[in-house]
Length: 157
Image (cartoon, rainbow, N blue to C red):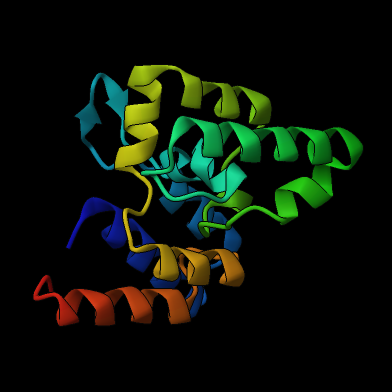
């Protein structure tokens, strides 16, 4: 199981087991005790991921990402709460402080930062990503079940 799938599964499990908000916040703030390219691996990598904001898969080309980023910036200027609500949720958002929304988008233009965003965002077929975007929640039971079914079908379970 990948780190991304593991974090998603743990987040979904925490939601299902009825953790109290303080317990969930502590869990979300706990580093995975690993670093990648000098960056602590925490749930913030998911909640602050620019791909989450623009609603594209990690392999989207620059022009597609920029087009969706411009749509997000325009909506964010009009209504910040609505723009954030329209993003793909990861299950971490309510437990992670996120004041630098537009900075997260800008990171998609920096090669090193984009690589980190790509690593911690789904690389799935376009039809599966469309399902994730429709559900608007990466850790929904339906999405996790669909990803697991796809992995089994492809011998990756």
